[in-house]
Image (cartoon, rainbow, N blue to C red):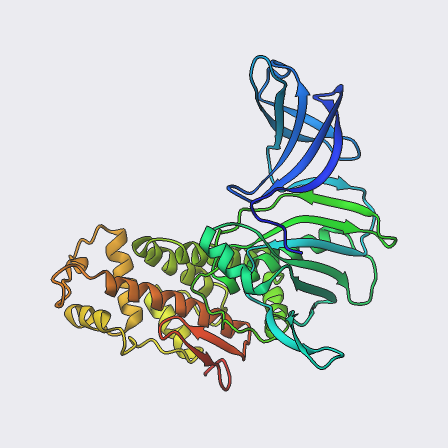
Length: 424
């Protein structure tokens, strides 16, 4: 069952038993709101005006760890006030019993389309629709199961029409050998999964309301809230649109290997993805700058690409990974702009346009006039941005040894990698 994204989810019904060290007895509901903003809100009713005269306090809920909360309220002089307490830092850890875990559960907000629709024959011979979920992922001894929540046919329509944040999938993580594990072992895996699903979607996803259970099923760890995901559903990315069940299971293990190689490697990878995702949801001009930043950081994760100018590094990466650096023939505006400025290839166009944007176009490169319209060509800049984002996707997918189909955002066609990903 997919929760209504416009309604809050109730995480707990409990009481505040302590405020800044002083005893209290306040019935509350803990709500997780997804829209219009994603946050945890703790609501209390039935307290008169002026109950709280301070904007924040450390509160303790019955059965939960204390945390700092922002306090607000509303109501008239002759009515009970409604008070709310919002955790100052979210997500917030509220249960940590220092007990080994057997399983971790959470929900994915605005995940990519990694499930599909199939048919199943009933006993009477009729056919019915079923949801086909991704093949479970095994990585470094972990087993990750991702299941779609709700009606897969309606999700994209609702999320795009209303530009909302909502639950799309549930996640369950255990050790493949069913042994126990610590919270500190599994949280980096959840964070890596969030980054990978965001890369697949082309926009940030959220991993919300993490719950850890021990061997008898008792909740021994809980984290409320999430990092803010990008609303809506459809964003340009490499995602093929009709996913194979094995797409994640074939690709995420290598991503996890990259993510855990070292702290420095993890930081480079996450910064590269941050700028790629920000570029994907930005204006064209900002996007070009962010795309080159993302590419530079991604190149720093490739030991075979030695320090040099960004243009030289990108050309070497294209050569080594067998990726074309030519301007696609369908990019007519960019071809014209390149001819006007004597640019050798699409890499040249990306780097020099980025430099013109950063340095206030000191050489007048952005004064190029489209011959058809007589105006500065946003079409050419859009094509440069598209090339840069495509290049980032292909280089990272090749690092992950991906062999399946991907969508080429420049041609809007499905393509496949063939042969080896590296060329000498």
